[in-house]
Image 1 (tube, rainbow, N blue to C red):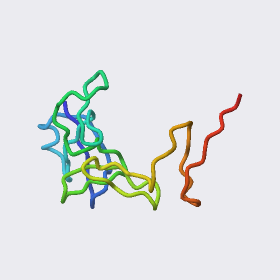
Image 2: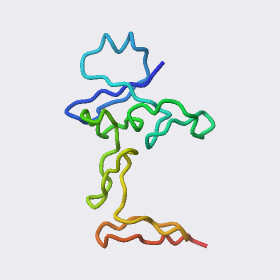
Image 3: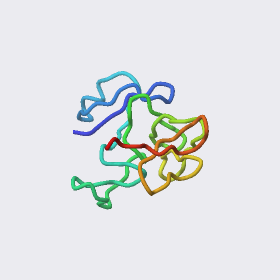
Image 4: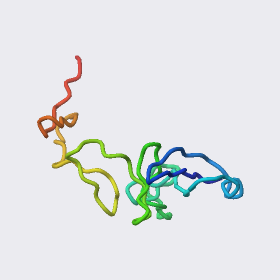
Length: 119
């Protein structure tokens, strides 16, 4: 079995696991995707890169984008200030998050806010 995404106007509408022979009987634009691909890297069942073929940069997600020109899937834009970055096809903030704790992006201030965990 493989995974396939149904794409309409560049947007992923659904993702299913099926055999190619079943997909061939369906209407619509079905494009194969790989559950083990993220950021242009193929990962094995142990969660580590395994050198496999990274199919279409990322696993397709419902509401995500299929870019036919580049033949890649990527998530929908999380914030207006973030930009898509080839060859990973992952969204990047205007600058990286600090590494000294947990942070969330604040689009209103275009900054990282530290998450304060309860004691």
